[in-house]
Every structure is written in structure tokens, then in C-alpha cells.
Image (cartoon, rainbow, N blue to C red; front, side, top):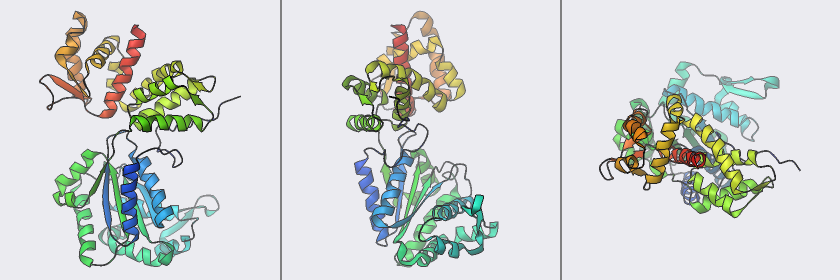
Length: 398
């Protein structure tokens, strides 16, 4: 009997049905959505390193906010956006597109009037057309525009939730930071109910950039930090995912999957997909996991590392060093001297070049909080990937 399609979605936000764990974070964000539905402005920042599942969590909470609290929800992906005008255009364009088949579609079209244009086959797609002057006006009058929009919808919605995802191009902009602070101040001083939940999603570095440009935002954001899955959550993810397509996982294989993943959702999806594809009998055993890990490590490296660095870590000599690092690593750091002691004289000669190369491309940093001569991986994702590479090197060496 042939297997179903892979239940894993590497490179894409997970579906709501496949969402796992994050109970505390979901409850906190859902509480903010509830407060917004009762007329209290909420502003939060969902912060996490790459690969932690930020967008998946934001999508899950957005669905809950619409289902449980009847909020009008918009998920605006802002990758590449560098101006406030383009930001508001994407927000309202997404709102128009997501409302096309909803009971409030007529009100949305009336609100935007001639700015909504039907496009595509049989007019089943719409888009928002606005002049530069219109967009500037929306930037300056964002709060009143949202209030008028909610008045137009009337009793059909209790408020609105706006997810601002991927702030890389805006976070270092003083204009965006000051706009956000002014927006909150304008709403706070109006003394009126404002049923809006603004959820910014991005790396912690992006939040710090915003604070450097506008320190007062530190008092505005409710910060929700996303951490790696627990071992229990990771096992639950794999069990549920494989079971959804009729594939069983043996106990040892489940432990290996959790160990290699180290609680990182992006690794879990790549590894799970690779293991699913190498399995031949719909029963995942440890051999399947190890074969899948070999494939997943290669895919993750190509996707997540710079091309020059990926090429470097594929060399036999550097992989020997990686194996020594894996054996010497204590938690998330390793000591230069301990790694050197495990290298051959030839490998030791290139070790400092290896360290410098890794530092140059941002994979390694010196760990100031650990003993002298200690290094750590710049991100959790790099650490997990390098451990996968080290495990692969061990297998080839044995």
C-alpha cells in the first residue's frame, strides 16, 4: 500500500491542524486577542531566532482570534518592505483579498470604494489600488482609518488583529519606530475604546533595532519569547505527523528524531520530510532516521548557510573539526583548547583558520559568558545544524 503525501512542510508555516505545543504562548496571545475584542488596544512583539516557528504560531493565534473572539484578522508579510506607505498598502490589500468571500465583503468594498479593483479570471481576485497620496494619508491617519473601517463593518466583527510579519526591512527605520509609538500615543490619549491587536513578528535583533530608534517602545510592547520545543512536544509532533498519514514510529526512532531536532521546528520539518521519503514500509525505525538525517543535513545546510560557508563545511578536514567540536561542546559553547587536543597535527594547523572563517560569516562568535577561549554558535539553528553534520561525519568515520 503506497504512502500518503508527506505530512511535513519544510520551508512553509505549519497548518493550523498540524500545530503542536506552545500552550503558554498561545494562552498569552489569545488573552491579548480577547482584551482587544473588549475594546483595549494590544501591542505585542513575538520574538524568536530563525526556525522557531514564529509565523506558524502567529497564524495559529490569528485563527483562534477570529474563531473565538470574532476579530477581523490580517496577516501581512512585510519581507522587503522599507517604507510606511508600502506597509499600509500590504495591510489593506491583504484585508481586501482575505474578505472577498466573507459576509463582510460588501462593507469592505464600500469602505475602499473605487480603490478596489477586480482582477483575474471571472473577477475572483481583487486588489487595492491607491495613489502615493492616498497611501501617505493612510500612514498619517492609520488609527482613524481602522476605526472607520470597524464602524463600517458594524456588529459583524468585534475588532481587528493585524500581524506584521518579517520586519527586517522596517526595524532599523526611525520612521517606522516613531510611527508605531505615535500610533499608540494617539490611541491612548483619545480615551476611547480601540479594539485592535497589533502583533509584530520578528527576530529579537529586530526588536532591539526598534528600541534603539525609539526607546519608549520598550514600554509599549508585550514581548512573547519563543523557545525551542520541549522533548515531549517534539516527540508529540513527530508521532502526530507520522500517524496522520498512517506511518508508525518505533520508540528508538522517536528518541533519535527528538535528539537530532533539539526542539527546533524548522529542523523537525526538514528531518521528518527526509525520513518519510526514505522509509519503505510505513514503519519508521532508527535506520530510517539516520538515513533521513544524512539527507536533511545537506538540505538544511544549503538553505540556511551562506554558499561559501556550506562549501567549506563539506570539506573532509572541516568535518573532522566539526566532529571534534561536537565531542567537546558543553551546552552551547566549546573551548578552543579542548577541540585542539582532539585534532591531528594536520587538522590542528587549520583550526584557527576554521574559527576565523566561521566568525567572518557570522556562524561562530566568542562566548563572553564562558571561560576564556570559548566559542558558541551565533544562533541556535547553526548549533543544531552543525551537530547534525558532526553526527553524519561520525557515521562516515566509523
